[in-house]
Each structure stands twice: as structure tokens, then as C-alpha cells.
Length: 173
Image 1 (cartoon, one colour):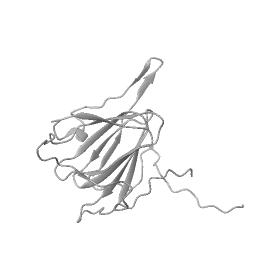
Image 2 (tube, rainbow, N blue to C red; image 1 turned 180 degrees about the vertical axis):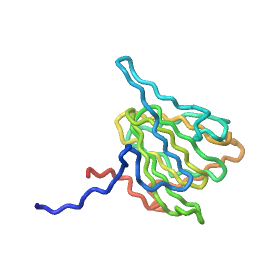
Image 3 (cartoon, one colour; image 1 turned 90 degrees about the horizontal axis):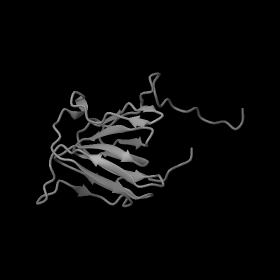
Image 4 (cartoon, helix red, strand yellow; image 1 turned 45 degrees about the horizontal axis):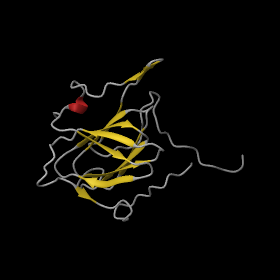
């Protein structure tokens, strides 16, 4: 057959679970969406779920305008726990933890209305969230530490600086 083309790599198992390598400590958990003619429901916080093993001590929401990127950001003391409430977003993770078994690895997690999920980002993992849709993205974060206004646990790098080698262009392949 012409033209020759490579075969796609496996992305999910027979149960629909992703087979992509994950950064050590990252947890990307798809939520079960229950839908009928009236709308839909997804359980977000279930304290019996291991995702919520650390207590909820603080919460805030943030937005991302269409086409914009928030990040790179990183915390040294806290984990972030995201739930995307609205919009189409991909969060790119980069493991900057020297000594981690996944040091310098990337992981990409996507969120849409049809694919609700929770994402735990461990301390030391750089993250940038990209709104690739036409509507504002709204995200709730449930960090594992309250915000310290006097000494913020927040470190930033411009996503276009090249210090973290990731191309945010969205290919059509």
C-alpha cells in the first residue's frame, strides 16, 4: 500500500485505560459521567477514594482565556489537585525532580466536558495548562497546603522561554 505509514502505538488497554507512561506520583483519574436527557452528574470528591487521602485544606478556582497558557508553575511544598469544571484544557507535566525515576519525563493530560477527571500534581513537578478551546476554562484546585500570602510556594517559568523543552503547537495528526 502506498504511501507507507507507521502504525499507531497503543494508547489504551481493552478497558479503555491509558497505557501512556506517567510521571512518578502523578494521578490522572477519569471520573464516571452519568448522563441522561436532563443532563449529567460526576462525583468529584469522595473521601473514600485514595485520590483524596490528604485532607482538603484549601480550595480556589482559576480561569484560562481561550488560546492562552498558564504556566510553567511548580510548588516545592504542596501537591495540586485539579478538577476542570468547564472548557477544553490540556495540562502538560514535566518532572524536574532530580532523583525521581521519571526525571525529565513529560506527561500530557486532557480535559473536556466529555472527559471529566481529577489530576494530582506532586510537589516538584512543573505544570502548564493550555486552553485549546473557544471558551474560557474554569479549574478548581484543592492544594494540599493553604496558600501562604507572606511566602508563596510558587515558582514560575515563561512557557515560551525554552527552559522546559515543550512545543505547545497542536498538530493535526
